[in-house]
Image (cartoon, rainbow, N blue to C red; front, side, top):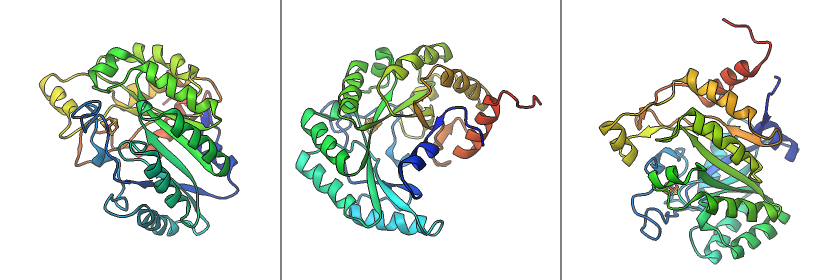
Length: 298
Ligand code: SF4
């Protein structure tokens, strides 16, 4: 199928001579925006219950979670290899020695061929980044930062606990060490309309990111955002509006930026809105159809 952007699937297939799947891990980390070091209560949209697939449980060791994840995916493809995806909470929020032990444990598991490590931009330092640089010379490594917005007013409103300058620093310091850098943004945060998202696109694009994940704002039960939404509902995009916006957004990004996803789908029992009922690949198909200049107009 023709692609109208640099998609993650194609990019990762060029990196490995075999099929590669990420396995999510909950390594039992906390988050400084929850435990009081930076903030309490966390980002207003956050509920980590939405991150974890069923095989992923912080009471199990990293090795056990990876072995369970492998069993889950091996049913589909026998020749699969894996990236250990440290996904839940802040996966660099511990002593460097403890972090090294966890990452090395993951890399020692058979058929694990690399790591993806999700974190906050204010939870890396030069020592850790130097270790990541050395690590990236001997294994495949993506360091992924939650950016969420470039607008400091929004970052304050969502109780993010860091500003955009912090994100710029972390992304630049990581990229300058030759490490693949991922970024995660949310479209439709309170106070950010379509024009504001489009204003931010070139700013995001100017960061030395390798990969970008874009998500629609979701209101999850039990979060501060859910309380806000209940008290004073604000506009959430319909699928049609969101596709239109993403089409415009993509056109403002540099063409070599790898786009990994455009939506997330939280478990139905936790999701308040928007209830699109679309799987990731279904959204991507709709988007590709919209981006196709030869599409038929129904
Ligand atoms: S989104 Fe990430 S940084 Fe924010 S509270 Fe949740 S785990 Fe912490």
